[in-house]
Image 1 (spheres, helix red, strand yellow):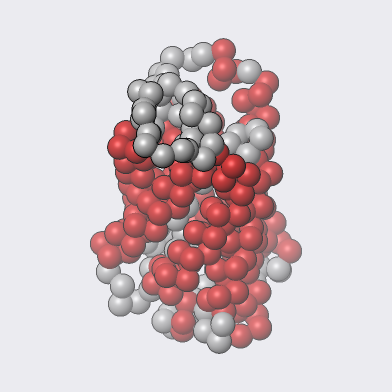
Image 2 (tube, rainbow, N blue to C red; image 1 turned 135 degrees about the horizontal axis):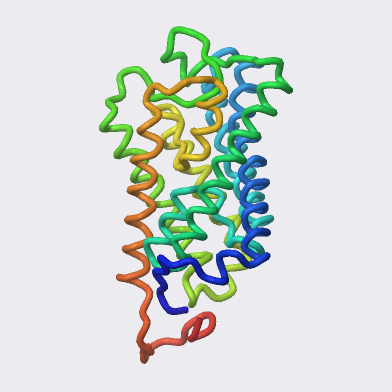
Length: 266
């Protein structure tokens, strides 16, 4: 597939398939955010201290499974982004048009808001405690950087975690020579999400996804450190898209010395 940077309004952008992609991203993001944020509330209700006594593992598992499912149910319609940073990575690599990217971002943010509203209603406005008792008060919905963690450090952490996520998405879902690995792409993407939550969950919640942070922040009205969850993931996503697209994916026919697993052409 040739790289495409379309800044004009095209027929593709108003096609009914694009509208189905919008709806798919909206619903899948709502499903993911409801499970990801809801797992923290559930753990807090049982343990009071959100991510101790195995809570971090449970949270990572919830994120991994929910994101894998969200990617699976959207892959046939939108490519399974469910994350503005993944969409930006695809845009940076010229895999989607600008207008389609904007449409995806809107769907993802609206889906996150819906999930947070439904979660707030269904739990009776429950609040949860923050990661590893590092915050002194209970809080509403929303992520925050842990006490003692610098804001710049959190940006770098989110950037690195999201780079790994978007790189995995490219390698398993967007690479034209991904071969049979594409059939298990959602599962592999879920694995990296879960692993990254284990790494960064106790530091800043390991969002890797501006939409994951936005809906709960809006409904819980918790904006402190919120910019971290935009700058870090978006930088990491864009960088991963550029690196994989322009340094690893070749557009010229190659003459490999070994047999490739998968098709030669996109």
